[in-house]
Length: 242
Image (cartoon, rainbow, N blue to C red):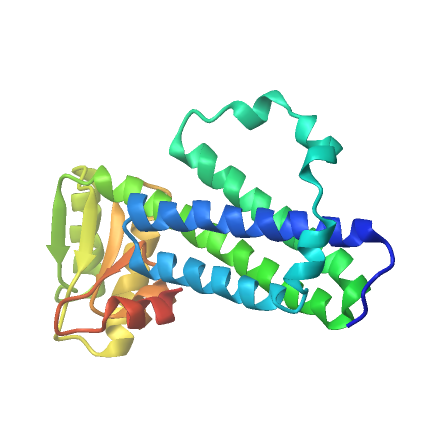
């Protein structure tokens, strides 16, 4: 690693290191306290610690020596949007954008100090993109589940035609969610029923939930999968369905 002669590089690295860490903490608290999602909170915490480990390669003493907050012209620049937060979602969106932009700056300016740093910060940025999508998906799922009032379990029926007719009638009656649960059917037939139910519910308001089988849920593009205490763990199911 080389120490750049331009002190501005260290000021940029220091400012964006702070931005990235602060933004990740904001989003992590949302996953932990608002979503109550231990999985997403853990992933965000791991990412925050990985960021801290990467920043260790940029000596803190050099970064702190370059810090000059009183004479930073940027502290006096503000836009109306910065002071406006009408909902928790606004805070989360702003937090993610802050992290992504900061990591991009660390990626580009970090190359001046260490060529290997750029690629590592790039990978962190991609992980943030994935987590941003995961949190948005979780939010939408929670909102849709909150609207469910009539939840019906349905088996595969005696034939594909009977199954489709039964499911269509329930959907037409306004059922909010249909859970496909059938222990009798072989995997190929169960997948066929799941795909038929996905086709029937696609574009509508009825959710399609697959019972137990995360693999069938993934292949049929179900809205969700129900796992019991003696079935796959939530962690294992997520490893399959994403």
